[in-house]
Image (cartoon, rainbow, N blue to C red; front, side, top):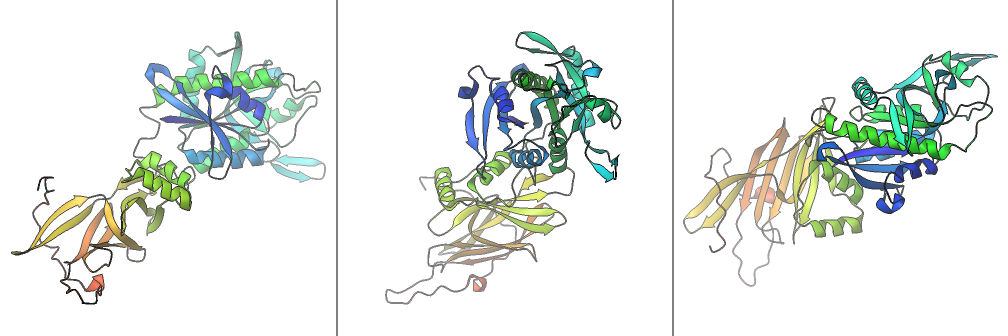
Length: 455
């Protein structure tokens, strides 16, 4: 499911997003982040039968600090598009009217600079919308003829720069002062710069866009009476663009199934069951016993994910899949962060099946991604050892050692111990697996065949 993140600065702006559904809040599901912040989610239909999910959430408070923190928090859900919607002040001298929508090409922090006596020397601190996104915005603007249809009215859509500051402005000629720093500035708000900067800084592969409706002109007549319709037209414009863009961008630009979006948007270290669910949505592994895994991790507030450094910006991810009487089952992914877009690959392991018969020892082999036993990994040598008990005492089973290198695993050693013969009164002592007999791994053994049920 393609995901669209929507951040607003105020609850009334969020309400406008929720009202995109016919029954408002009743058509949305309220959910909670692992750190107890709430958000709403629901599905929408796009063109050509495509569908997408919107995750919408309001900041705890307005302003740049909260915009940055809350955007970063919500990016952990790995959206394919990120929007900020709400209301703003518009540059009336450019022809903008109340209710028009302004879509960002960039945002700048107009308070960034140096104050020397009575003189302020500005620095142009900017956050930009990606050029390829601007191309799509331009095409969307053209196909819509620059119009947003809202509340049975045709309102104009503008595409340009946002000025962002920490203060509410209500004075004459406010935009003339801002135009001295960016002559094409169209809108003034308190969050756009921080939102775009957070999206760009946390993950360059997620396009971020600000769309806000004009509620005043930042002059002496500034008021709150036009907040609701301005937030409404922004939400509508956002939905229109998402509905237009998703089917067109899907083939070439949205992340592929085998591409991981992290480290910011996917939590690492993964410490909670919610963190586990977020990783699983991307990696899509199969739990051996889903209900047992879910119950165990919810009770222990543990994710079952372990990250090991392999060096050169590569990591080994260990995932618990299920639990048996003596040990658990696991799978392993290689996470590669050497490229601009990190990638993942599940690892396969060469395994030996050793049967002790009257005719001697018979060995066969197979390859599998699941690892069953008690694993531990040495980050200094990049060696994974797995001790698999044949029974709970630990006096039989096998010990396998693998080196994790490049994009594969190499079997270094396989030790195997048959069930020892004990007399009734013998004291049972389990020997160390490192002392068990070695199986020659240089031999290519016949493939292992799974016995039929009636056998």
